[in-house]
Length: 321
Image 1 (cartoon, rainbow, N blue to C red):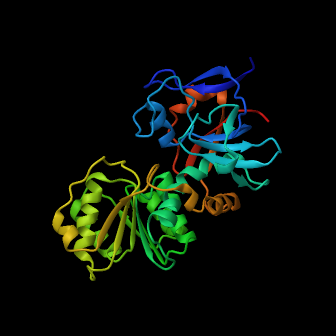
Image 2: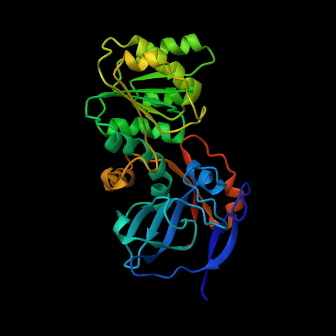
Image 3: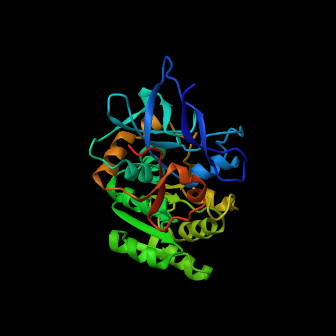
């Protein structure tokens, strides 16, 4: 039996190990592809830990939810999703119907680093809410990798005004230099933070929320209280929970405002309707990118616990080809 090298999670709570596993075999609907680059995203770690809602709970398991592959004809493709086996191996099985072509001149590591963080905001604005060019967008959690690229995504898709909110003042100032129209610092002073939200984001049309928890409660109260037209629709999209898994919402806020709360993540949308080929093209062109930090597959145990710098994403390179 032919074998390949892969990362393998053998126990929840421990990093994957560099292991030899049986090579995949093509079947009636899937083909074998060579893996060129796989991002270690927060959701990748979450699924591999068994704590993410998409985790099967089965062990052992190859981690990795997406990646860039080379198909048998030599073409490059982006593959993603939580179904089937993981992507952090030298070769994997892919469904040709869901493989998204990647331009031949694109850097696989950059595409692998960027697609997942860019996808969260792209999918939300393209497929979760009826966003239109010219509308305004608030990104809460804009100083993280996904949040910072969400600011660029909103602008790329035609937002007329973009507000960036986060804790890291230096990163917020960089986002302002890169095109955010206004910034809101999530400071320890709740009154000052609420006033900043009211001043900068009272009239936004869409909120992309990566934090949830107490900061969202504060922001929601401040924004709803400051809106001049309470009948104007506000789409609040919950994407991440970095500040906590729940919020307390006063029902009067829902009754007195045209507030619509929705979630955007695996299971809430058909990705085939989200224009992912256009996103791949935008990433490949350099318009929406995260800086890759490439590491070889054999260093997966050390790479797994690395804390990426702002704007960076660790990418595993399974082969030397």
